[in-house]
Length: 425
Image (cartoon, rainbow, N blue to C red; front, top):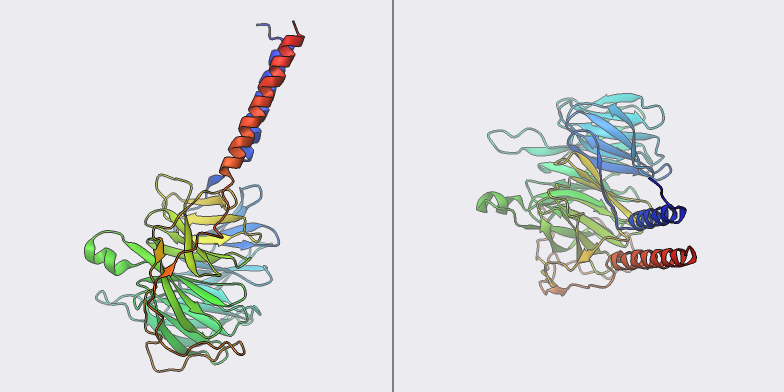
């Protein structure tokens, strides 16, 4: 069959235009990784993501630039938590079924097991100096009752536990302040956060937060601590999923600030490296709630890619704040969202309820303020006046812009083709 040269050129231009439009379209990508991925951390120096796979005990190394699998390293049994050393040399994971944590060399892939006798390691956080790992161990329920949990302090120089700290029931997520002074522990069954002084390894305060507190993230400057509260009691009692919440603690005073409403079943939380936003993944409805860290209000909701069914169990934000990486055990995928392009919907609540919560569950004093002249009240109860949600500051939506670019490109191609056709007559 004879094809004229101008027709071939026309076809090439059209295909190139479509590829260009597609390349700049908002990206919602699902990358298959392991079995039951539960969490992810990112090495900012190499742009490699490390995904903890509960189902097969592997850690999947992902090149986030090319979006390809580099390696899969077997690290234990029942991997739950994951953390990266400050020098990016090791990635640490907890082996819930193996009473241990594993250290994986990020260059050689060599694995070192660190036993923690009679434990159920779950969450993990590394001190900023890289000397210690703080590991939550919720324990095994007895007759359906969750016992008080333990936080193990593990020396990463000797690879041995050096302290045990009793906290609330069902301890899961844990985070350490950027200055290394405090560890914050999410007590799932107690709906509370235990605050540990890392110098004395003593609990200095226990703050009541939303139901089913699961994970914790801290802003880069340490000013605020954000939780994801799954809201499990309502789900069990009424047999359906309800909106959960995120509680906010002032990291300078270790005082409760307020609780804001998120989506259904909040499971994980991360703060962008820029500190502008906190992102709460909602496992129940496959969305992400955006919290503006200036107003500490929910300012928008991301419908995460419109996937038929998603269950987000972990989240990490790229070092430039442009991408969100979500561990989805329902689909066994790592889901990648371009936050610059994604459509942001208004929050479900135009007015964000501020939930009054007791400041402390025990009589131990809260930590002294780390900032001079803060002038903050020592009152233990947050104000009950509703705070109006601020829409400004949500992630920008460039979808329309790129669609218009695509239309313009195609129109230009048609004009060029028409001129070529006339010149060929």
